[in-house]
Length: 322
Image (cartoon, rainbow, N blue to C red; front, top):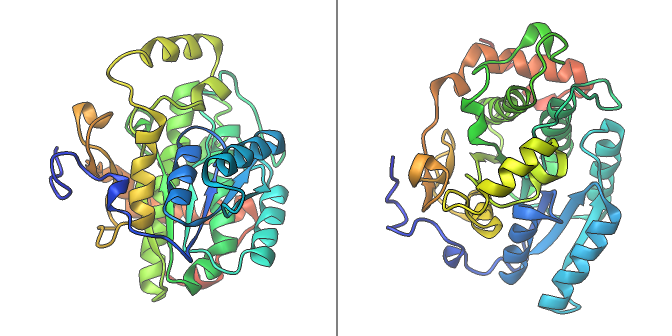
């Protein structure tokens, strides 16, 4: 499927005009596609607030960006561990206290292909807990600040959502019976997508001024798998990264940048590369499988997520029953 909306080269950051006066929050902004997105946003005169787990890497990333764009480059970080909901809550409070405007929150951070079953401090399977539950609470706590600027939430998903169960495993959310590093990761990314699409429903019914977009980076040479994957997975990925089927981390950042800045995008869509197998190539609107927007599953996942995290989205009450 080829989207020709943005011409044969697809969407590129050349389309972004100045972002002066706008503030972008991004999780995992100190490495890979998140770092490249931060770079490009700063190049367009935006303010960037990174929400990252590792203070040392974050400090180094900020220093690197200031070396490139000058000491006055408006970039800083807030320490946040998505795998720890108390850390997410504290980080969100810090953002609310120190960041008066938030035009977009890019949910970019993730862990992937964790080789053996692990749990977050809150008792969740690590990939679901980090990728979905952490972002679920963060988006909820920052929603009103985003709405004040009629802003956006961008959820960075993965084509992996097609390779798992293609639904949510409600009877065993922690994968105690059938843990599998890849299928469990795919489960977490499908959960993120379903959260975003159900949030679109709730925003519309509650007449709120926030747009929600879902994208994926395609096959990009980032540190994601090398950070959390097992040795065999890391070796296979290293070999694959030398092939034409893997693009740069910078190009992997294009879909999330497009969703954070481009006007007149359709919300009920999945954006990313539109070339071979939608893994590489020009960025545009890709293929969205129907099971990713299964209404009954989305509503149930929302309820399960609120109960699991103890976080309630106040404006979403009484809306969108299956």
